[in-house]
Image (tube, rainbow, N blue to C red; front, side):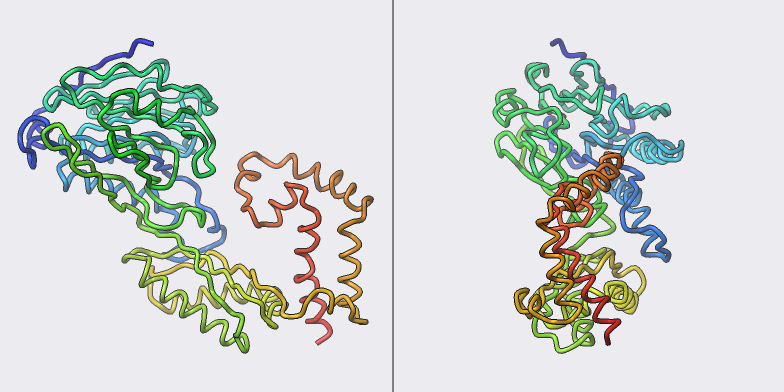
Length: 449
């Protein structure tokens, strides 16, 4: 496939920006970002108010503003966005206007921007569009396209997605490296389904290394990874974590090129909210007051170790075999309120608690409980029988199963692996029924007491 080639003429302001901090031709720095998901709806915020919740709602925009500010402060030669700039079609034009304003900041600083669209913002996904400043170049979707920065001898090659479900290997169609230029490949790819991500635009590492480019700027996988050193093949990860499955530092990478050789690839954190999973051991806790004190200690330790001055959005997971198990299961609403009160007590915009998940186990064994002669023992025996009752299983498959099959794809995909919804979708009736016992027994005990 023949590549389309366009030369980007650098305006006067850009020329000054490119030359600052450089040691002559072939020495420059650039930023590589991906998976920005501007205005992506964040989970767990329904009905939540306050400055912390509002900060989380605006996190993707704030993170992008920080990235643009970093590009200007570092006087980079250019910025690459390797797919999923948008999370999908715009709800209105405000998303596009925000992006245009940020591109205007870079245009004023003379910094070119190269945008490639991935599965979330494929040509078929976006129906609204706005004209962008002259410093922005978007890779076409019909064939690989090449943009040149002649003043620093850089050639960038890439192809945007025409359709969300792009299942073809796009790499063979990318052009041969341009002689006497620093060649960069830009690609949105699952690279074999890494990290549980959908395997869009699949390819092998060998396909990339064989191309002969000096650097591969990848997108789609949301964890920072350097897959290959020479040449560097890099996923920068997403710019801002959006839920509890995207924990830890998020951002872009700053690449330093000196005399035509890559000297350094440095992660640049750009997130304004940092997600964290906080395990709390409660096995030896004497009562609820001690459990709450352990929540407080766990949050304070996590803030010191992980937050790095950012708002910490966290989920507590209570673990251990404990006599408090049924009481904890029956008090999840109170635990969440208590945990949020602890977070608020640390100050404004310090921490926000998304959930308190009870993953403890009862201290008494199930056989002993089933031998009880009271209502709890009878309940356990009934549930044991239900898990192997073919008539009940058939009814679960027919009635709730049909309803679940009609759920939107996005809802089914968002179900967490250990959630009741995920168990129901998978038809894992044994585990689903087993998981009901703590909830039912805690309610029964509360009535008896």
